[in-house]
Length: 173
Image (cartoon, rainbow, N blue to C red):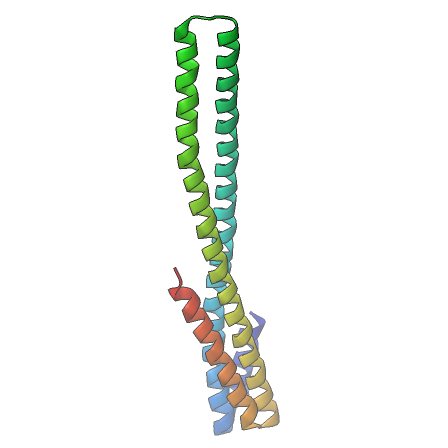
């Protein structure tokens, strides 16, 4: 929380109206930065979790596909050995069941992959919002040190861009 400590120091030492305005604005931006940072980390973690779940589903899909293949190969062997129809029927039903299972597993894996991508886009937007909020704090700090209003306006503009990116990320689905 180095930004927070820096902001508190500026607010405490601010004596002129301009310094107080800038320091107060920095305190607000620092609070927003903390919130945006938490959301960015949350969606980054969600992206990783969903990606892993999708990967698990694809592994399950592959296992079902191997079982389907084995059932088909077993049917071929049973037919060659002229086994009874009941054995062949059992493996044929297993093969059909595996084929049906694979379709639902594939759908679930693809859905999880899309959710992971969406969470990643949201995390990226939150992280970009963080960057602009941090730039806003830096420019505002420089404004206090140099007493240049242009730097404060630049910091405010950067903070607004960061806030817009964070709100956009929050509203994404």
